[in-house]
Length: 116
Image 1 (tube, rainbow, N blue to C red):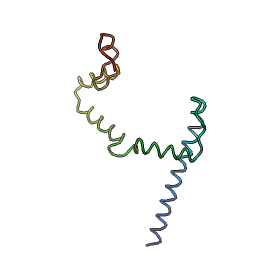
Image 2 (image 1 turned 120 degrees about the vertical axis):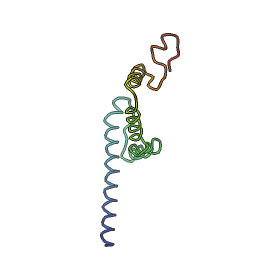
Image 3 (image 1 turned 60 degrees about the vertical axis):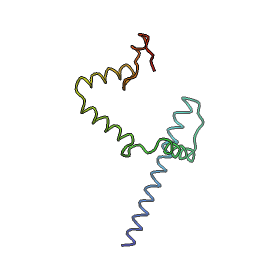
Image 4 (image 1 turned 30 degrees about the vertical axis):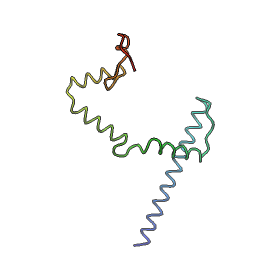
């Protein structure tokens, strides 16, 4: 039984290390393929790509956890389901003007209002 737990733990560790290595390699390859050509950015090495991943995790948190980006999407879907057809149409119109949550749109700025 103890051997099974150790083996299972080692497999979990190996999969974790492989996932981190693949993510780091993907970030490095994508960065090096796109950003130097588009913006003249420097080429990243593998360890710099892992550092960038860690920095983005610190700054933005993990996307996909409850309450993260996925949680916000579910909350908006629930809010949308509770709206009347008139409220949905008003939201569509505001989002097309650039003020999804009631901000000033371009039409209001042309009338003398202040656009954000």
